[in-house]
Image (cartoon, rainbow, N blue to C red; front, top):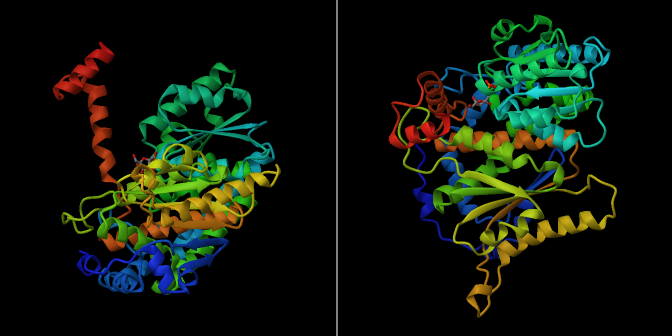
Length: 496
Ligand code: F6P
């Protein structure tokens, strides 16, 4: 278990003092990698604290854990698995990389066949999946698919039929391909949405609805049982976790909708970040340093949340994506060995889009009582051709927020005072290109992994989601009795 005591007894310096005492601080704490400028200088991390973090990293075996992750060793002990998402980007165990390439080749071949008309005239892609089987493709399409794409892509996750209804409202059932994305191919919401989508197609005159289905799964047997033809099942290795699966066939709608070259560039961008994570010293390693900053605030300063604001409309879904990545990975109460932990694990990740959030929630960031590490993400290049003043204003506001959080302002009127000395990190991207987005997502994956190693927890399982699923099944099988009085009364009111 990590020991944070040495960090807790360090002298506290304000961020302004840290800048004043080290003219090289910005250079030292800014890393330029794969089109991303990552600046963590506006945090309270001092050289002394960075040294202590490095010592803790040594105690927690960060280097050998990194090696285990990258070489495809068992790194998920509760499930006895490796974590092979990095192999999808061409790095790691030879066998895993070869298999990933083979399966990606199969996806590419199917995409080429669909493009050539093998499934008839297809104009719309309806992707059903949930959690990791939806959030990644949704983010990729929203970020990179804003101009006309060859196919319209809609991604449906919620079991609420209203979501499906909205997704297909402009789709022609006769020209729709249904991608059913589920690692396990057992997820209730996804299978229900798949069935209803096929019913909708049938009502729209499609006679062979299964012939329009492509299955994206690590459980091809279940997809076969469902009735999908083997030629349209795109499998992936079960050691790729759901929240890490946009790099394999779960990325199919993005690869089809954006084109294979774009999808490949996303993988290449991720691979460039992997190389940085794999080969850089701890002291120079951006995901590691950012994880140290995360941990400084949760472990030393008691922060409970971490906020992420995308100052770019194209990245508006990033906070949603990161919520699953970070909270499903690191929201645990036991170590990898099953011991109870008596320190905080994952902070609550939340956020939004700038400048909107400035007019809604930033009051709390500037004057509220919570300590929150805020992350800003912006792109140097705009995603539109309107007057450049739009983008200048967007970026100016982004930088102003970080500066204001840090500087604060004293006023005799307490209600108009800003305490300042509030931390933030900033990621400035050259442009929201496929490669930069791939690098950004890989950066967050590695940062999440480093957080987990430092906390002594296994980021690759998610047993916490099971109990609710089981109880939902029990309710649908046994009806509303046998539960606590509140739950029983609610169900009686709803169902009887
Ligand atoms: O319920 C959580 C979860 O298992 C996630 O980890 C996963 O991304 C999601 O459900 C969807 O699971 P599947 O891809 O197996 O349908």
